[in-house]
Amino acid sequence: MARIVAGIGSSHVPAIGAAIDNGKTEEPYWKRVFSGFVKSQEWMRELKPDVAIIVYNDHASAFSVEMIPTFALGCAVEFPPADEGWGPRPVPVVQGHPALASHIAQSVILDEFDLTICNKMEVDHGMTVPMNLLFGKVDKDAHWPCPVVPLAVNVVMYPPPTGHRCFMLGRAIRKAVESYPEDLKVVIFGTGGLSHQISGPRAGLINSKWDKSFLDNLSKDPQKLVKIPHIDYMREAGAEGIEMVMWLVMRGALDDKADEIYRFYTVPASNTAVGHIILANRPRGAAKKAATKSKRPAVKHKRAAARVKSAVRRSKR
Image (cartoon, rainbow, N blue to C red; front, side, top):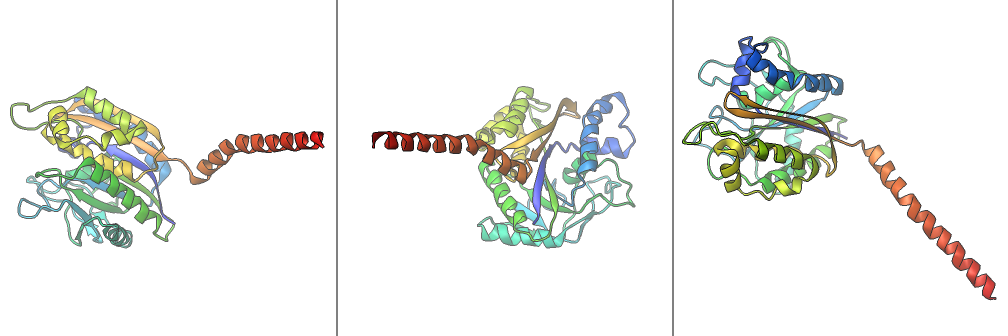
């Protein structure tokens, strides 16, 4: 049986990709950003996932105002890097996992989530930048460490999906993955954000207090986050802060109680707050053992009470 073992939240700032591609990662401005992902790359190398599901938003590369799917699932064999106006990024073609993707599509659609199925799709920095941050720089002619199932979410044109809808889609994805018969270790990414606004009178807005509270609740109390309305994201996190709902797809795909493995936050990168978190599901065997252990005292008390009652009845005879 396949299982989602961990969730990853990461910003996908395009300038981070440019810094990687142009060899600027050791410059003082960028070094502090990339230093925050060193431990994460080590963790990822040790984990060695079989598949990554990456939730991201397209930036007018695969879609446009002419066609705006709310949720689009990539079921293709491969996903080439898109030309975003200055040529495709020098990264490998992303290899898909059509069998798992098709299984997820069938399960999730029958669970009443309407997905757009994409059998041909280019992917942009929204997906490849987080892959670089977690897998490291990979030569164009090499291969990414594992295949990917892309899930594009519309957070560009109004109306985007609610945080609650994204969270529940994550729940449906987890159900789909766990019904897949092959033994696969799966990680899921939620990407985008954190607080930022790239245009208008509030261009450059960053709200660190909001961002850190979001990360706290993502780890400890995600139900608080699913209730946040669109207007609060706009007001508190900037026009592009709505990207944070994609992190809720990731969180919904995890168990209610997940362990926070690592967190990183810095400002700014370009004009964006950079956030990152790793949450891991607890091993199923360990969770069952803990639950059984917690029940034992109650069982002992019941048995002791039964012995006392029996002794009282005998004494009355």
